[in-house]
Length: 271
Image 1 (spheres, rainbow, N blue to C red):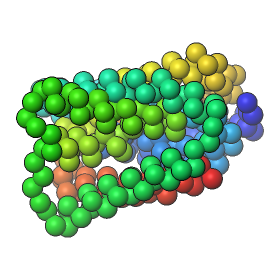
Image 2 (cartoon, rainbow, N blue to C red; image 1 turned 90 degrees about the vertical axis):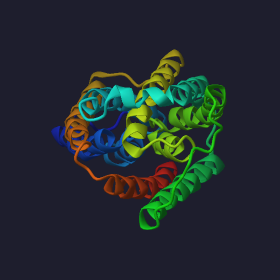
Image 3 (tube, one colour; image 1 turned 180 degrees about the vertical axis):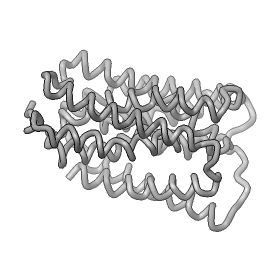
């Protein structure tokens, strides 16, 4: 795997600087920020795609873990309890499929899948922005049954886990809208639940890349990952502390914009 020109000081500064705002989104909304780190890894820090994906997953893990701790001050864990069936289902489905996504990355390129993901992200983003402009009531789409919620969550989680491990992202761009529009959660609770689910999915993805010996190693790579993690932690701290004060409508606008931008970044990163 190609190792970029990253032993120069500016590379570490850029890695840190880019990840502060990306980590802020993770803490504020509940995203790992991987869809934005991937272009940074590939085009700013000059990693090849197959090296960038597992590194992205590792930094996502750090960002999510810290964001979960910080968000707990603003969003009580009790708020997630009513949504435990879907959380369990989404996490289980995501962890199952994440174990296969890493293998697919090593075997093929998936232009058609990337395009579908981009369209899906953009569509959900537009839907969320439209809901802010024209508010409507969105009851949960799944019957009020714990079994139904687990099954529906597992089915959706299969797709989320595959996307996560193939692109090196946490999957929050798909998990948060799913929790809102399918299961009727509010956006703050959905953000915290998304982080909890993503932690399991990302861990499985990293484990599979490790088993495939596909995680790049070397002192320089560890230093780059550490710089990105440090920037992500700082950003996640700032974003997580802002959760309690950010208006719900503003969060929806930010998330909608992030989703639309992520669709463009996904295609750009793939190219």
